[in-house]
Image (cartoon, rainbow, N blue to C red; front, side, top):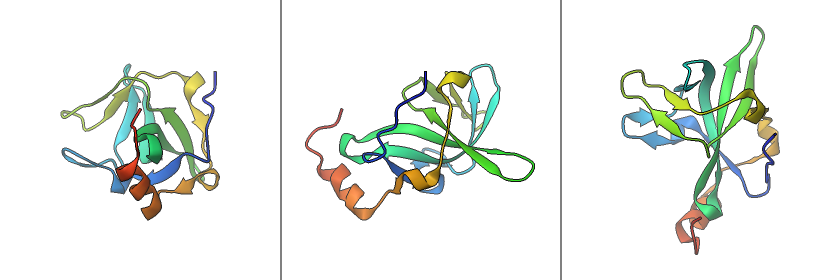
Length: 121
């Protein structure tokens, strides 16, 4: 089952702009709970009006170029202080290819929408 993207509502935010307790998400590896590395986080897809993280944008290096994939953020995830990795419940069926041109970048207007949204889901 592939996730259905609501492209109009989602915004891309670069991983270097996503801050957590020990730094940013820039280059943080994301792995399955079985320690299979899916790639490194290049960014996230957010729904500003709902104030929700929807997907991790995961980059995998191939011989000629990087490929980007989406991993749904609605699955349990743990940031390990020991390894510096994020571990998620995942399977190949929920990972889909991502084209950055299909989603607008997070903007100042999106920030305003996030701050002043009437309700968060």
